[in-house]
Image 1 (tube, rainbow, N blue to C red):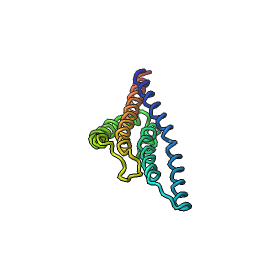
Image 2: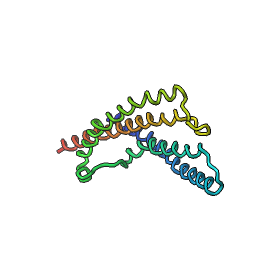
Image 3: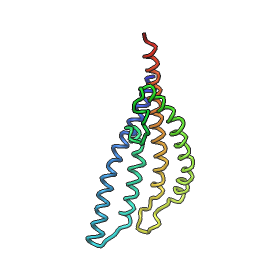
Image 4: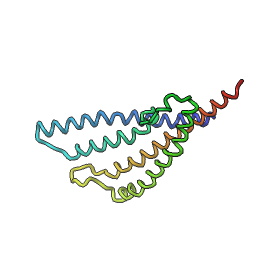
Length: 175
């Protein structure tokens, strides 16, 4: 059981670090957007790479931060029954949700995105604009990283659920 707990904590730590690092993308995105607006409306200048960087930062922020959000319970949940449920029931709901919904969706997303990303890497796909960011292949790679981070956090959630169920069963067996 200790191995399960340490594996879950390791995955949590990975997504915690990535989430905290990626959070800076929000500040950077705001600053770049502010710069775009000032340059455009005050100086009459426009730079495509700056505008495209906002899209890149937005993708990085939301897709790489999704595992962090799952770690902290920030994803949408219909909790009509879940909120009032006992910890053991919540653990069962989380475990079943991960196994039935999260794992298959991540597997499908990764499987169908891989050829898309692979073909982008094969030609080092870049922006269609000459002065744009010539790293579309890296942007598309974020899709795969997203699927892996969410899947890993789902595994951590499932492992913690198993531990909670086992603990509840153990506590229920004591006189």
